[in-house]
Image 1 (cartoon, rainbow, N blue to C red):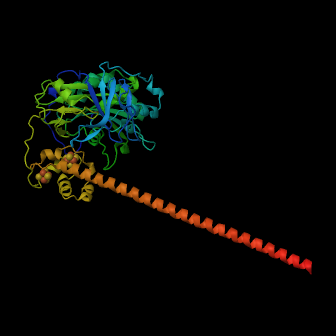
Image 2 (cartoon, rainbow, N blue to C red; image 1 turned 90 degrees about the vertical axis):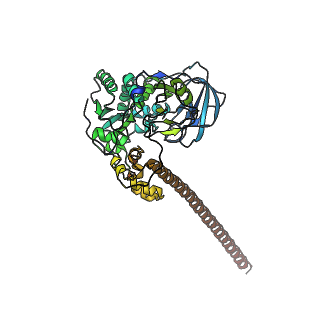
Image 3 (spheres, rainbow, N blue to C red; image 1 turned 60 degrees about the vertical axis):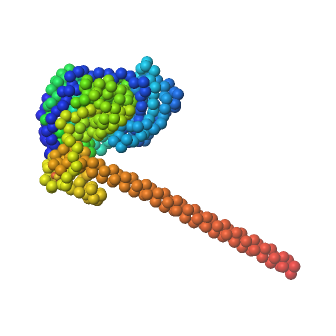
Length: 504
Ligand code: SF4
Ligand code: SF4
């Protein structure tokens, strides 16, 4: 075990509520009759279907291919028949629908042929990344960024530290805690593969000190692999939001990721514990990512716990399995109380990023009308990214988006610490999300019009060039005609003159 080297500014000491969901081992959610699989469960371009309605599929069979660079493949979580490829409601705060593939399961849960790798050390990092991409693996901490990209530091970077994020700082979520307790060895399988792909100098397994059983399980598993001399468990203080990528890096290494920069800029790569486990399954067992551990908890859940759930399983079935006192249209939270969002309909599928379903929050803040800002500065003191939320709020509210950028809006990790401490109950994070969406929309529009202008200018230049070439061809033709006429005239004149000479 090694000691953390730093800390981050602000943050909160929140009351933990993890006991409720950590009293029983991980359970398997029963196989649902229908699995609804959104084509986009990751950051980047949606996957493209490679199956048709009516096709029979096997568990683990690829059903959609990655599109473009930032994308991953999608697989059938169980065997059955494709019954629809259409728009379906997805778990999103706006109530959006999106393209999904629906599988009617046949109950056999029959696997497609799997191709485990015999010895990953014989593979190049590129080959490993390719398998991870094809296996559909994304960051399982909640963001859903394609993992193969984070396993490619590029030719200009070397990796000093690979950090495995086991902080899980949201007060109700415990899926990583349970995974570490029960499958520490499987996590280390993935860690070894990641280490091989990145050639990192050291590996730091960072776990908050409120998870003693997870810490001992990881240490025990590590002790059984004495060759992992560069790998250590780092026990870090429990403080929200330590699980944020920049925050955990600062706590564990004492290094700060620059504003607008990436961890790799300072020689660090960070992955979630669940992601490492998925990498191990993909390489050593040939299993793509088709399920995840979901925490189902809250004051209204009778059998709170952690459930290994196939993607596409309706949330309603998961809630039924855990038994809740929830009324059909009662809202619940997807994610934690700090960073999650409210959903009301439960006929929505479990996706790759669904780490927690929370029904009923203890000491939930009563809904209150926001009051004017009293400039107390509490939000700035609580901000782990050293931002000035009060200023950001004023500029976002005034739609002065250039100013929000100047105040580093995009460094905001939407942790909700500022909302939590604001005595005026101003929904600051909602303003920041609104400003980010507006800026990104403007950016998209600007790129679209730049592209249209570029296309117009290219077409214009091509037409002008073609006109010039046409004129040049005409000029050359005229010149050739004139030259040939002059030649003929000259020959005729010569003939006439020679005839006259003969007559004389
Ligand atoms: S939500 Fe953003 S601005 Fe508010 S405390 Fe977190 S990082 Fe700072
Ligand atoms: S905490 Fe709320 S009231 Fe205080 S400065 Fe920030 S926004 Fe204003």
